[in-house]
Length: 233
Image 1 (cartoon, one colour):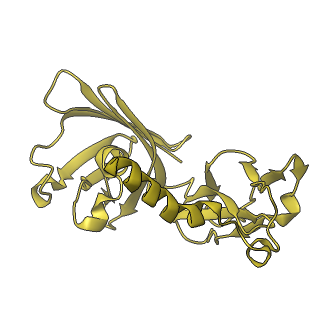
Image 2 (tube, rainbow, N blue to C red):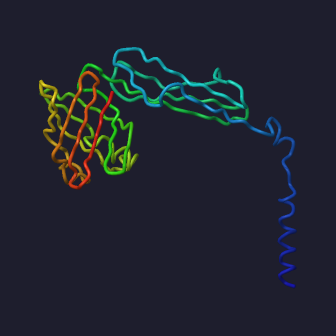
Image 3 (cartoon, rainbow, N blue to C red):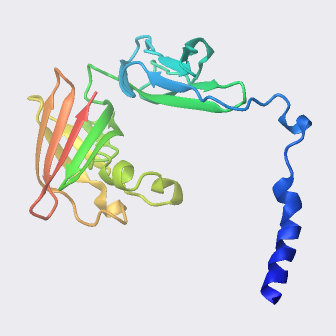
């Protein structure tokens, strides 16, 4: 009996809330159904643009409720082709109810004619395989070059993305030397300055193709599996 009375009391208290509907003022200007825009980028989400040349944005297509609304796309983000680096171009469309949809493209401004450049890093170790890591190689001016991550972004970008913002350093900085015959030597690995990289890569086999701007690293990481890194631009 007490259970029935308690249930009835709770139902009575809840009834005003359950029966309350939105007023005309609250629903005014709101459509009963809302349709979100669907954005589809032309071309790839990761592209390159040569240093010193104007960037030709492939653009984006947007549809909403089956209609083409590409003329409503707002594009933001500047690509400075006068400076090596990675840039983001954003595309967005807002529907009549104020809900937005967006897409983004990464643009790497690269130097096609030099070893020092920005690259997209692909890395593989065992069954783990990551792509499109932002890798940079800088000319030190003394015949050597510094790469920001010899691991090709495997940990810094693939397994543990964003952790550097909290003070975790998964980047393996290294010093490289490019020989006249286009062979590459790993002169020094920055594992001594990193809390994570206690052991360096060994038995490093490196190739560089200046025609394509592709660099490959085939390295021993102290196990049966080899560690592979490919840099492209």
